[in-house]
Image (cartoon, rainbow over all chains, first blue to last red; front, side, top):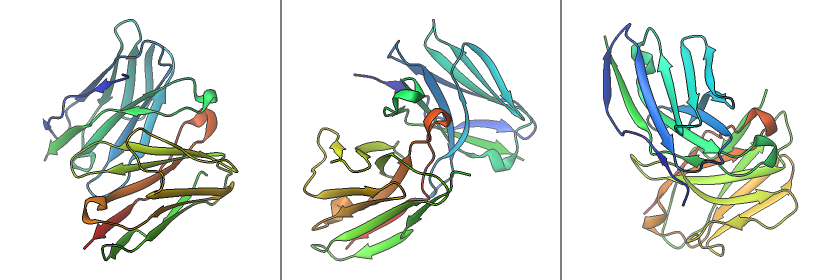
Length: 113
Length: 114
């Protein structure tokens, strides 16, 4: 059974600090990795995705992927109170295959001002 | 781009009635649609996958006769919860596939069955 594991949190960080969110996955054949942010009562919104080992940066967000360790992380620099939400990690096959993603249970992030 | 419209956003219905949830892709064509449900403080649970013009593929444990999915066009997919019961109360979210850009989500429908 394919699994995606995340620490449920809550992870509390002060405003302006770096928040580090982690995710591990069981299916070694996974090829696409996504981070979503979900505010309470709302549907998830895509933050970024990554396909290749290494880092991918987009503004204050950096996704890091290590396929050998089956580990993907999300760093949020200069954390803001508005970043307080649940962050969902999702893992899947090649996007061109169009198959379903497997979601982690999410990590609650709280940024304190 | 990739605007998804999901309606209604909230619905309250009586036990035994049916509720239809619509998901429209406004500026793209969605050949594949995923339907999820989410309980409070839990992650997304995939219910079914539908491809335009084909029957939906349901995940194990999801009753296909209770959760009717129709994907008759590339811009509209519907989920009908039939003979709803209180345990069907949940947050239902559609998610069209965007190809290499991954997946986006509708705004969700909060269903409360009383």
